[in-house]
Length: 272
Image (tube, rainbow, N blue to C red):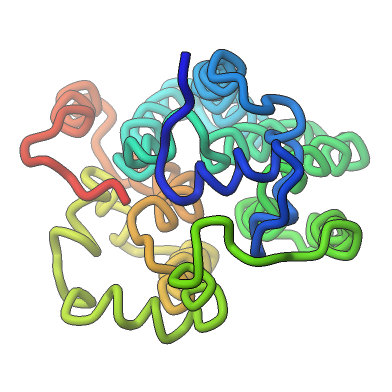
């Protein structure tokens, strides 16, 4: 089976082959080390990430005191978001879904009171994607997970960034993230099909949002100032809390119908 994928996937394959890559790909070392250039291993990681994410999310919410039915409904809402699936270019060679899955498991462990063990699990998540401790801190509303940012810091020191294996044009993007991000989103900041519609049923979270949710959404959207992707970043950053808040604002008896409408695509969604 031959590995294919977009620019990000090619960089992970380059890491697996021992090549230098630009930041932040130089600190995302765990999956390239485990999967190498084996398509079967990348597909296996992608496949198991779905049930792990579902179990991690439900375990976290139930341990936090949510009714199990609301936890399951919120898990369906989260995993049906098009950005969680992501574009075909990151399937199966990608880090977002596995990182989110492991981070949610860390949240479950944390919610059960085993904070030290949760930080150990979060070490794995941070080795997959460096932003995992930041998202965990936001979802758990605690600064303690930020301690785990030491992992990408050490990885950056040990594995210094290098030129992009895809060529000078991509080096230019890495060198000027703000400029390239603004260019990528030019004339789309108020595009509802990109900025709002992909949330689907998740927009219900905007009814009387908490301060925590407001901060998480702000951080999620601020990513767009330094990244060319959109929906994928938003949904992996804020999706868990959006799902929790949304189902709480919806009538329980209507949830099966509303979720049925949420999980299908009425219009080809933005996934990048």
